[in-house]
Length: 311
Image (cartoon, rainbow, N blue to C red; front, side, top):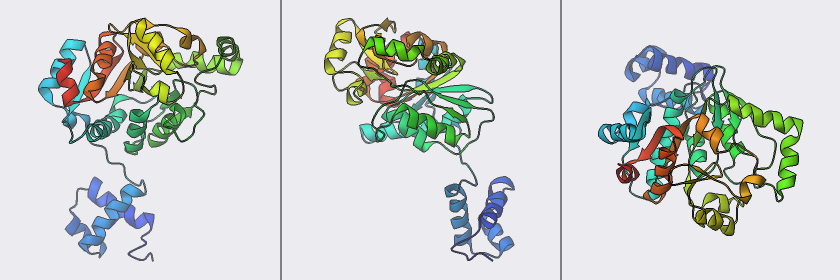
């Protein structure tokens, strides 16, 4: 028999079944199993830690109704979830990521293909997702690989989201950016990579964040672009960046030298997917407004302060 401080999965699962499925309160579970109430509480915690149960908060409970409705009406969104502002910018971002993490399993359906972008926001979402299987889900990497495995890369975000939802993970086996346009074209013509890029059109849904077109943007931090590259795009009218691609204030693509060296989904493909945009911080208001005007996301998770600037 397992000791109380090292209970077996079977014992923990029995307590979880009685509590979450049968609706029996903790005191009655303790009597039924011959345990103390604190031990039952411990078992319920272990049930989550051991992934015996997955706890997911319904997305509608993150919604601030009036702001969300106005965002949907103004920008033609299917849904918007507005999270109350936190005590700091980081706190707000983490709360937005928590909300998006619990909404994501509702966003995708059985048999769908989800495209995943990259960056700190998407990484935080992936780490906060509940263990919530979605039958027949395929999860695809939207942009190629980055060299530093310590960064929140597209492949790490894709892998973790697929793992949390028991989906099939398909990484894009190519670099995100090449030093030479001719090399990028040659790689994209390779049969294996060409097929992976073609199959990105299978993505029915996508999750991504964005950044403003500034020198400290994530594409510079990840060595995809240089500050000079970003400045050149800004001179052409770019105000925002989605999945490494630049857009102007109306959401139209802004093209430049970097586009010829990148391997991954472009602006047109991103528009074809039903997108879940996860974003926080008023500094991203122009970029967010551009993405919304351009018709990129159909669903939005956002903090209250940023939402107020958009409506």
